[in-house]
Image: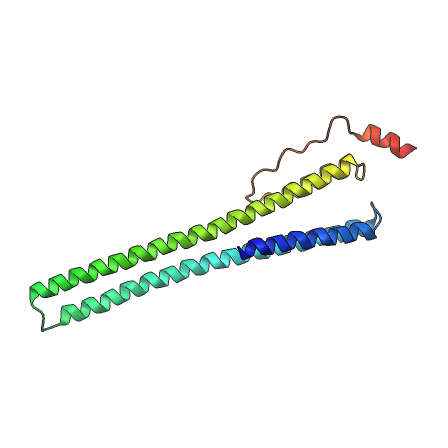
Length: 197
């Protein structure tokens, strides 16, 4: 869940920074485009860092579980060897003890496997949640673009280009974005007429 909080912090910081840029720069200025481009690059880097951290955590869990299983097998092997080498046990007692050791080993391995499954499920839940957060961020950005177009802050070409860039940015493994189309009553003709006044 830390990654969700981090993702939320990134989204909040992005929104705040974007608002500052929009308040302090002209609508279609080169300065605003440059600052927004750098802000988008920052967000992309931060999101990539979160994914890398999740991958490292998943790898660490896998390695930890391998080590745990190896430890269980090594312990079993040492105890089995002690029982097998024992001169004071009868063949029947030795067989019962070896059977009990094998049963204990199997129970410990099953518990380790169950633990691995539960840890993996928790990690994957967080990853899915993060993917959902990213999808929501993408959808929110698409809605912002649509609103900017509706309010005639950007041209149709700018809307289409920004939409294509956004879809390309989020293409890696997210659910497809909602179908955002320009509204039929909006278009460059009306926009051009207003700009011509």
